[in-house]
Length: 365
Image: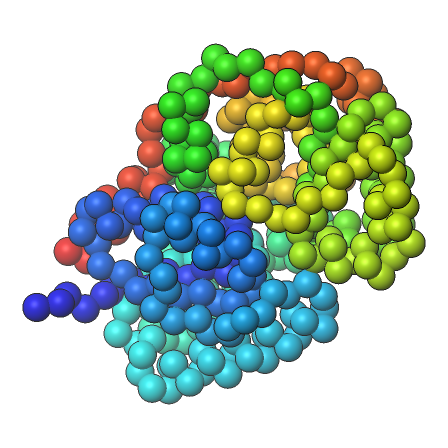
């Protein structure tokens, strides 16, 4: 007889998928029964990621066939999301679960946390406790993190600082001793995860940016595009375009300038192992992504964060530099690392995903 799932897992973005895939695999290995829901905030490359990580297809897609890339798209998706969720709640489909899992600090995460509370679930927040120094930087991620901490009753925090930030939180705070990105990275690297491999032979700069704080601020966006073009004067550049970044570029003067620059290659977003291979070929990484920062810190790749502030301390003071959006800081970083090689570090074998799975398994089995 099939056991009814008591856990509902929600995934909204590609980054969430990558970080939640090892948790789902750990559930499968431990015999933890769960239902999986995609919110539809992102959909690009999800089918690739399902095959890459061996994760089953979802039980429900709240808003199918959409990729949110603009503010108008976000509004349209939000309306459809709440219609779908309210239909599920009204039909009693979401009232049977004991725990509802959300990850990180996306719009999907806060929407699902609210919906889960309305349905009577205990909200479980994975990657809890991250904090920046400003309520509005990054926006809206910092506000979302703090709101979810008020809604959730189980908080899986990845490090000592995150645990300390949750000292006044309601419910259970569990130290996972690492981010689930570690498990995803080990899965993507295979034997290479044991480290001591010389990387950077590609002698190119890898660029990735997608955050709202950079795309929606015209001054910051123009400054960053100038930095990319200036970097291309020193190094070959491979620029991975997230859908939101591509959409923003298409409405700007910068896309033709990037396309005609022979030192810049514009790439579509790709499967996760392919992106990891791209990292391993680069001399250095320029990114505004938190997940990229975590990957860089674990791998040891020289990285500059294209932000004024970060909620993550991963790699800071080691191989990761916070730019403060300073063109001078970026220029100095590029000159220092252009054409250089670096050595991949061994990725720790301890599994945060198993910590999460074992804690929940004791409560639902």
